[in-house]
Amino acid sequence: IDSYELTQPESLTVRPDATLTINCKVSYSVTGYSTGWIRQPAGKALEWIGYIWSDGDLYYKDSLKSKFSITRDTS
Image 1 (cartoon, rainbow, N blue to C red):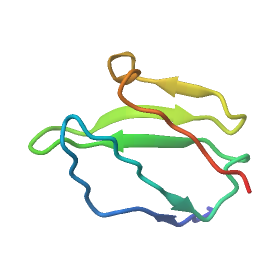
Image 2: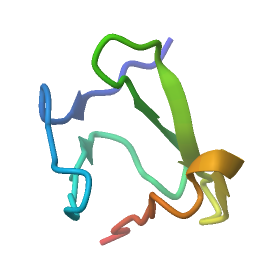
Image 3: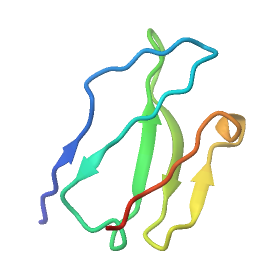
Image 4: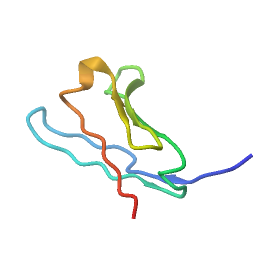
């Protein structure tokens, strides 16, 4: 079983009208694995935001498409 490390902020809060960028550092090759993003609004359940597949294709939950943008740096 492989083990990978993901480094991300513990918690972030943003005003409804503000733009927020979240950077997530991973110990694996992003061109070899897909990466999913999940959020948990205060007091609510976990919710999938979307994925960036290993080939770079994107998938977003329909209701969140206009609110999130997932990108990656392959360098």
